[in-house]
Length: 347
Image (cartoon, rainbow, N blue to C red):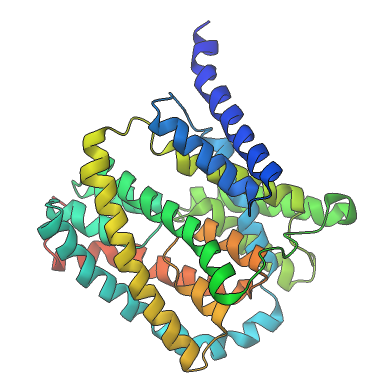
């Protein structure tokens, strides 16, 4: 009975997410397996439903996107890296400006303590920033809500802007059907996902569920062992679990948190959006990258979500993910040192 009671919130969450995917598919809305679960779980969470994520299952789903990115790392992409250098050189400046704007915003306007303000402003991975902030003495609940709000809004607005500003159809095939991919390649993708994920965790690799599989799949790709992305069915499943996880972050949100924390996160996202737009426009005008690639490379969303959008937009996945990896690596490695400069070091 106890096990059944513990399982019930997860079953309800999966059911609500599936209903959202079904409704979005039925209506013909874009990315139904991402936005349907996200919207349904968000509405249910704000309505007071006791939802619960799927833990390691959701984490495992992210390995699919890691393999998708790794499979796109080919010798041809490596030859393109010098051409990305000028655009990549702007990423540290981009991060510094985000910190310079975000930390004062969260401390002076939102009245967050210095530690919480610093890690709320940093555009790193959601889980990483929450963990770092918690270790430094920040408010975990505030950090979770601010970063979940950032990811939610970016993931929602980015497709709208891609369609309306750049004329992208978001109908690019996300992958070939599983039945058309050789069994040996499917097996190697599964090996890359599992070994990369668990091996990355053992080595203490940040973002191990994505970066570990990405590294192993990249090695397989460069050796000529795999030539395709994971099957479409797997990428749809990854979208489903990612969308569900974003919505679940809002479980238990109070009116006070909505007013003080979530609205602060919304305001900051729009500040981020203006900054991201400025850098993307600079990259476009200088000819460093085409419009869609520049837009997605500087969109301050999560790595997993940006991977999905890059795939469905038919963008250069290597270019987009290289920029996001650079941003995340700089934030992860530099955050503890920068925190001290902002008076937000570990207590």
